[in-house]
Length: 151
Image (spheres, rainbow, N blue to C red):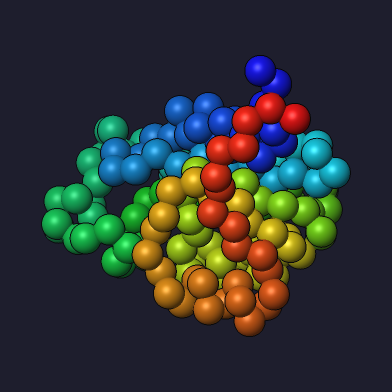
């Protein structure tokens, strides 16, 4: 069976997330335009910085619940890394679609709103009403992925 485009790209986010160095949650993201992958990203520390496997997770040590105190995490989110990779390589993502295996948080939503991305397709829910509000106000389509099958 040949996968539908959304099936194809979501499956790829789940491959990309395998590179994650986060001890708590593995997330993968793709930025796609005209059915071509422009950039990928996974959550983890910036290049050249020791991984959390070596340093430990401060948020875990302090027992901080998911979705809180992002600022003390050493890592970047998958969506942030994908946007940064596109910028680093001089690739315009204006008019692109972001595929992510987890719904973006409000921090990532801010970057997505300013990046020119017009649609977000995500697989797993993540509760962040502010992110949803920003996507709605900016008129960025936020679509929960539902497997479709072959094309």
